[in-house]
Image 1 (tube, rainbow, N blue to C red):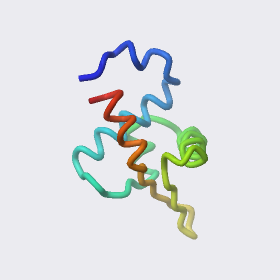
Image 2 (image 1 turned 90 degrees about the vertical axis):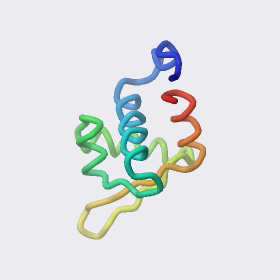
Image 3 (image 1 turned 60 degrees about the vertical axis):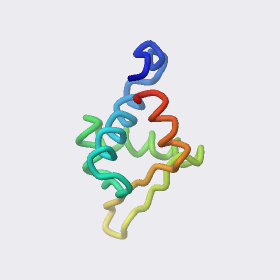
Image 4 (image 1 turned 30 degrees about the vertical axis):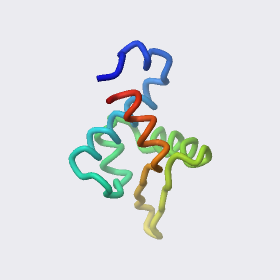
Amino acid sequence: MADPSASDDLDPALAAVLQAFHDTLRETPGKRLSLARLSKRAGLPMSTLRRLLTQLEDAGLAIVTMDENGAGSVAPTPELLGLIDDLLG
């Protein structure tokens, strides 16, 4: 497991999203995550989640897809998976 002090400087909301990615992808590897499920698992309002995902997408670390009805899903890039693995083991 990673050193807990390594995540001390992380924004708590970002840490929650990364932990939710980690937990969910361990259960269902390779599957896109719905934004609703990720929001629930991270314990974050959808507005906060969308803001964080926009930042991750702009950095090339996530691929977010929005449907016409406003529902969406997200897939982490291999780079983000590597970062999550480094942080959370």
